[in-house]
Length: 228
Image (cartoon, rainbow, N blue to C red; front, side, top):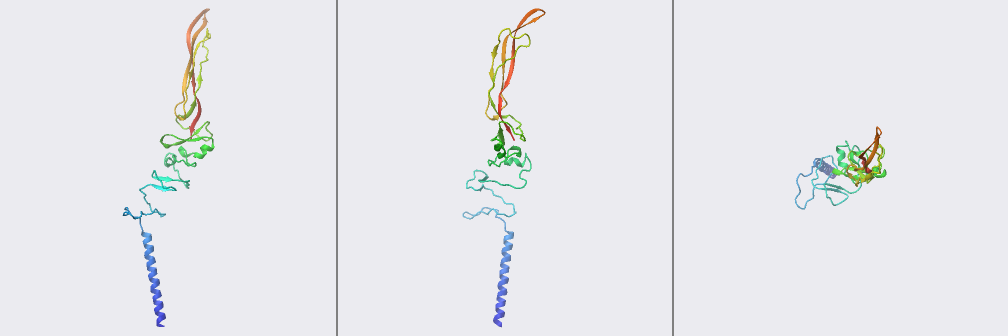
């Protein structure tokens, strides 16, 4: 009988001790906070956890790679849910430099994939903004409000007649070329061709003549425009 009581007493003590140890461990886990100073040489840095506590990573952070030329480097797809871009001119700017096909163009209205699927090409302009180069801007897209375009040279020749009696003799023609540019923020080129010659007309039965010029202005052909 005495042995049985002793055994029960020992079991009760063991159970109480185990419960006490577990409670201390749980309490420590719940109150643990990441260190606020760098560890001594040879020790590990505090881990990035999945807790709701705000954590700071002062060094570069990489995902899917061991090289970090910038603060955050991600190799692989980025998938986001919820309200990622709260405004077209605010938070959305952080997405303007993505090179992933699912990246957003400026103003966050279309993606890189929308651009290429529609026959366009993604182009990075000033301040790392991305627009789409189109030969013909699609419905639902908006032309970027500056001069981002590609143009083709136009040979320009003045073929106008005089406003009076016509040319007395064929005039001397002075044609021109508009010039062109590759895709850039450049206004559409233009040039003015002119003709110079003698024109004659009759006024009150008297023939009158004068040397005059006529002018024709031509513009380069736009072959691409930027849109978003």
